[in-house]
Each structure stands twice: as C-alpha cells, then as structure tokens.
Length: 436
Image (cartoon, rainbow, N blue to C red; front, side, top):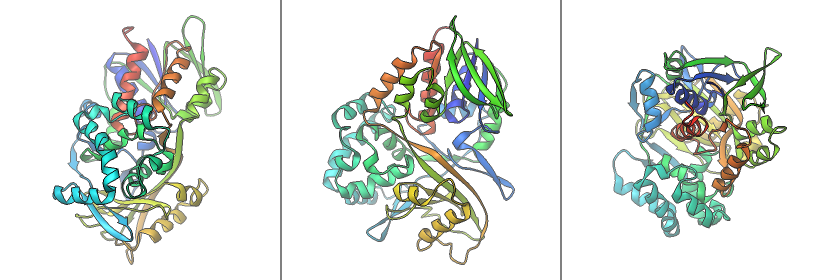
C-alpha cells in the first residue's frame, strides 16, 4: 500500500508516524523546503530557535510516545508563570506554589457569574482530560446548548476581559466575540496542564523523525506544492503537484490531508466543492511571532511572561525558556494586531511596536537587541466555528465520496500538539482501518 500525506506540520508528521507504525510506505509532501510547518525553527546566533510547539504538557501521552520513538529526548521544566494587566495593575499568575492565592485571584478575575459558568467546564476536563478536545462528548452537549452565543455573550465582561481573552487571543488569535463555548474545552485543557520543554528544541526531534529507521518507509518531498486531488476509477487517488515549475502526478491507494482547512478547501474546489465550502467556514486568524535576543536579562525567574490587553497589537511577551531570560518571544494577535500588522510589515517595525508596548513592564530599556528571528502567518491560528462538531460531521459525509481519502489537522481535535496527534491517529485508523 502506498499512502501520501499532504503537509508536514505537526498533523502531517503525526500521520506519517502512525502510518509507518503499520509498516506502510509513505510519501510526505511539503510545499516549503523544510518540514515542521508552524513548529519550524530558524538559526539565530549559533543556535536554532523554535517558533511553536515548545511547551509539552504532562498530559501529552501520544506526543510523548512519538518523542520516545525518536530517541527519547531530554525535557526540562518550564511551568506556568505569567503576569497580566488588570485595570493598569500587574497581576502575577503562577502554578509554582501558592494555590490558595491563585484561587483568590481567579475568583477576583472571573467574578461569581464566571465561576458559576466556567467551573462545570473546568471540572469536566479535570475529571477526564480526554474531554478537553474539540468534539468530545461533554463539549458537544455544551455546543448544542450554548453555541448560539459567543464567549463574549455567554460570560460577563469582567470574566471575558480578564480570563477568557488572554486564553483565546493566545491560542486562537481570536477575540472572545469570535469564539464559542462548545470549543472552549480545547483551551481549558491547555490551561489546566503543566509544562516542560524539549531541552534541545523541537528541531532536534524533527531531525530524528526524518532519519528514523523502520518500520515502514518515509520519503519526504520538499518544495512539492500539491495543486489538486482526484478520485480515479478502481479506487486509487491521484495527486498533482508542482516542483521547480514542473507539474507531475502520482497515484496512491490512500491520501491524507494534514494541511489547514482553508488550504484543503482550495485543493477540493473542483473535485468536492461542497466539502470546500464547509472547510471555508472554519476560521483562521493571523499571527506574527518575533524571537529577540537582548544583551542582558529581560525577565526574572519568578515572572517570565506578560499578557497584554485589547488596546494594543502585542498579545504576549515571554521568556523563550526557563534558562533563556534574555531571549523574548513576542506574539502579535487579535483585532488590533490585524489592523496594525500584515504580510507587508517589516520585522523591525513589528518588533519596535512590541517593544514600545512591553517596555514599561520588562527590562528592555538600555538593553540592546543582538539578533532576532521573525515569522508572519496569515492563517496562523485556528478558531474553529460555532457548533463545530456538526460541521465536521457534515464534512466527513462529503469527503466520504473520495474512497481512501482522509483529512486531519488543527481544526479536528484542537490546535495543541497532543490534539493534532490524537486527530492524526484517528484519521489513520479511519482511512486504513483493517486494510493493512
């Protein structure tokens, strides 16, 4: 059996991994030169820095199994330690001790109405972490009951501004009035977890995956832009792609798409237009990320990140790692960011904007930059859709017309690395089943 996987981000890597575990021959198509997608890295001052996927939750069972198969890399503690602006004051939030203090802060931030409405959701994820994904049984019920409302309508302003927005803006690039209660479990699962980081970065794990020996075989086709998928008589699927300006086709027994929903919609416009229309209802929002090295330390160990409110383009500034307090990761997302930053913005202008917002709260004055790396992603963060599980059920019925075709990605179970691995495993099971 020959199987093609389109896209080599987290979802594509996970799909290829699970296929290889079944001893299947895999061709992994990637439009860019290197694999990794949004978890890719860039060189900076003699090291490589990762743009995404740095924080690995203790509940990331499937991802940790993958890491173990790739040589069992070392992890180091990172934790959850941040601060945010609340009515002009800096409020520290940390899982490092003081549970009573954190509980009091949460009550203050949420208000009674927020606690009353969020506690059942939090409790469901705490009791069963597998409920903290898109389309889980518990959150299907929440979606059916409340997704006629946005989170901004479901909760009072106090809770929305101080609790919900810092979560959605960081994880989905979306404002609370662009997100829905039925999808919030995938966010809560991230907030309720505790975290480590790969000691030598995600890029080391990607190198190990690329060079992993059997079972199965893996051929990585870099700079191969897939342009169409078609169903052929006899049950095979044909992929058309472009490489160095030359178009070619290849036939496969199975094909798995692991690219964002909007990109898959473009591929299916002519062959499955009804599926393409559904995929375009899934929302994505832009994000810009800058990793900046300063001469001196910027953060302290007891305050390693800062979240900002809706008045500026900067959503978060945090230390790159627990031992990298002179290395800042700036994240720009949200409504103001969309109007201030675009694909045409220069990295220097974006970083300067971030520094102007962050300067009163972190130590960057008279602390010159030494180097930076920057990325802008027009469809960087997925915010799903209202009653998202119903859309996905309908999508699955539409793509069933393509025998042997499956679609996975950040819109299936959530945007976390673990959710992408779970969705990929489910997709491989559905597409391959007992056939191999």
